Image (cartoon, rainbow, N blue to C red; front, side, top):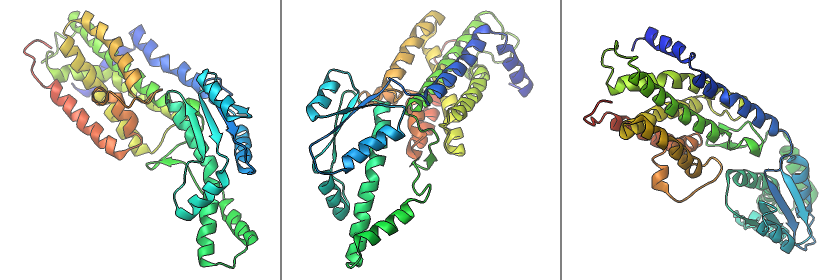
Length: 366
């Protein structure tokens, strides 16, 4: 397909009302999530409880969480039993119970270089939201462990140093802005709201739906005889090109949405992952189209695949079972490849395998 034909086909897509609806469906979703991320939400409730202890550190952490994380509902309980009962009754998503020997465990961790559990976590099913708030809790505990490790390190080399000198030097450097930054595999996280954590998965699911819609448009146009003037209109490459015509527009919209959401990471990594997602989604949708043959069967299979993807891919829930089925879904690779170069390589191999499967001759008109 020539470049002129490609742009003419893109222009043709804007005459389809359903395509325009799908294209702009993401705008209110992104806008709503962006507004909600700055407001207090009832989507996640965390119970905080402190075991009987003379230490003031757990109280400081609890107070810090309530002040610095306004988008999460925190409930402070007087006892461990009360905190557990709230989770069991499903009135809270997770309970954090600070152990009575918090100080001694932190001190031991500073000496051994290995931290022991200092908070008992009580929760139900694991979700992306809970994974995010666990990182918040770790970020609040880390300064205390950091100081204990620093104190042990200095006193082993300068036994005469006083506690006052230790504190002065430690807080002199630890108060420097941006001394520590939250990064994952070299990707800087911009968003600081747990509400935005599933947004990437929702956008990826939307792009996969766009790929299925593009494959359905291709079927409709083929039945209407719109491609009789094109040479090799029954070839697999011709079908893939026409599927990718609307999908290329959707990919640009998704890239803009990621930028708007504040979840954009490394430019090269983001672009590579998104390009692989677009290509693999087109190949995946076309492969399902070829296998199902009939348009009615293809339409019936689409919601089933979308539902399976929603459940098995780490969009809202982290499912550790059904790994074989997860490895068949393009979104699973995308959501992991954004944070892992290893999965980016696997994603490339997966896309090549999908292309090879699309090239297999099924001995019927495609």
